[in-house]
Length: 402
Image (cartoon, rainbow, N blue to C red):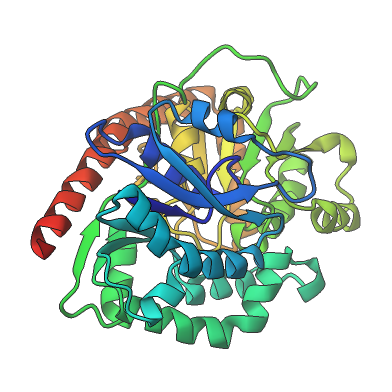
């Protein structure tokens, strides 16, 4: 099995987390060769040596690094070229029978365009149109956007053409939610394709309620946001809600994730939100740090404008955090309002502020939602079962071409 991984270790975003966890939990009888990039986290010196990457996976894999990644968008083009040049050789040398690729990165785009014959499965995590709509919905100015969002906006006409061409040449597709499966069937030609829904997951043995060191020096209740600092995740909406929350109660807002905080700090400054009310922790490299971040939170918030089924929400749920999230895309497939979390309309800062204050002021509700959230993860979002289902799909695809 060849896993074509445009994101791997150190993890930068949700696709990278998905690939790392899937590889780590794949049954031992699936021999894995990971074809990936040498990632340096933008804006940091974070980098993992080859031996450290292999040790972190926790199971035997072959690791083939095809190119470098030092930015958040342009590296994809060089990785696509490297895949076109080197995958045929790697397939021969490692005896790869099946490739598993990931969209919207389209790492094997050039191979698909030339009709490369090795069978493949593609996991579709989102769409170009969805990414653009989320960015535009944020209302942020062009130069406030993270570089990958700027490039996606500028190149969206071309990217959407390539998206349709790529999906038209893709026969076996995994989506990580029922919502995205329906969207593909409605807006793309899925006739004659195998379309399977296999969700994102969480390692609930790692992401669990624990007594951990507090990463922020504050005695106020903590509202936690995690994720790359990109506009589509709704940070601008959260800033509007912060203003209302801080008028009624003491709280400290903590932001964890790579990217520049400057546009958001400037927005807070203009709204008169004091720096003592928030902390940007930046990129956290290890799972231990992330577990500590979740466990120090009183409330977890995901005000996203467009996203599929965010792994970070599932991680917070696994740590028994009460979650407030936007009622968009596939998030309602994990969160049932009032049962294991709270859902609010997207772009509605007043509703978001009300939900946050409700949880900050009601200890029993917060604890009850957190317990039910973890139970949801244990029952439905285990990486072990997800990896088993994915391995079974590998077998079905291989049997169909033998």
